Length: 253
Image 1 (tube, rainbow, N blue to C red):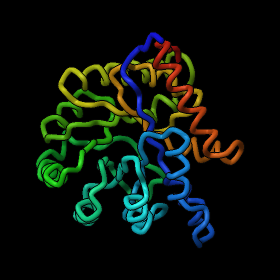
Image 2: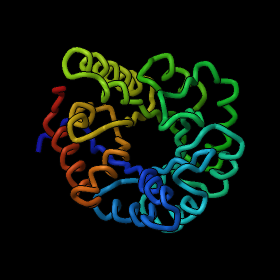
Image 3: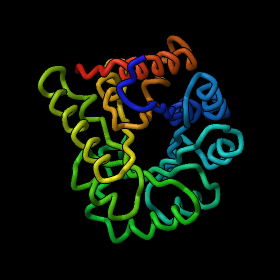
Image 4: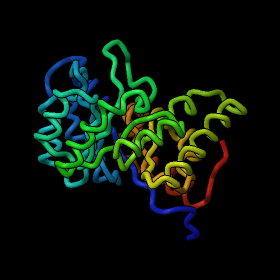
């Protein structure tokens, strides 16, 4: 097979399994069970966002995920002292720092590292010293990439929300080109590049085809589609779509 770039990892976000659970209370559906199913279906890692208001993932979920997973756990969190203490206690494989506003439905945009370098540098340093790999969730903007490198974060995750939300045609192509350019720039300055937010079967191909992106993190679409075809089947189809795009160099939008 003529592989267009190195192997592309799939991180599955289980937050919205917990959203369904919390809508009624109790313990069903269990996001940890979903994470284990995802691992069996081909996920390379699991992402869970522990929010300040605990609207979906809970502290107990994080404890159980860390104890039961055989694949890496990526803890999404805000850069607060409370979350730093939790990360240092559980020591996930990776932490992805994201912006967080209590009034938002989901993460809106990337973290403005360039305006917060002084505060973020020691924060990243503590996580790194504990053996936790740090990623920064940012817009596909060279200024933010330079800032991520300056504060010592080895990984960035490019926000693909604008690309996924854009209308087909020139608008989506413009956003796709921003992601492509940022991914190339990240590789050029020594950063590992991930991408995620809003990706679906329709939108994943052109992103998966970018050879300098090493990992995609996908959650809401997979959980929603699972209602119709099952969680394992949804993940397998996404894995297949990603692999095909990477192998074929599918850059169509």
